[in-house]
Amino acid sequence: MKIQKNEAIFRMKLKDLLKEKKDVITVQGVGKFTYDTLKKNVEKKLKDLTGRNKRGAHYGVGKNQFSMISAMWLALQEYEEKK
Image (cartoon, rainbow, N blue to C red):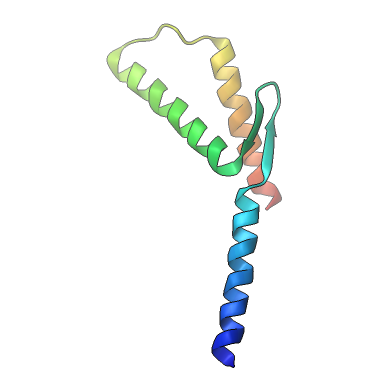
């Protein structure tokens, strides 16, 4: 009986976590993303910038790209603060 109750609680918590990660985050001027997708997207963009910097390739990235990364970062920050 106790095992079934603990299992039920675990399943409810797991469902809550899965729902939470599927929340849609709107990034002003960019689009809508799930939390995981937005986080991966920001990580990918920052890795790209780091690689460019190491190679000395400081061209091809303008204010628009930095504004987009900034907006994505702030959207993640706001989402995480609301948790």
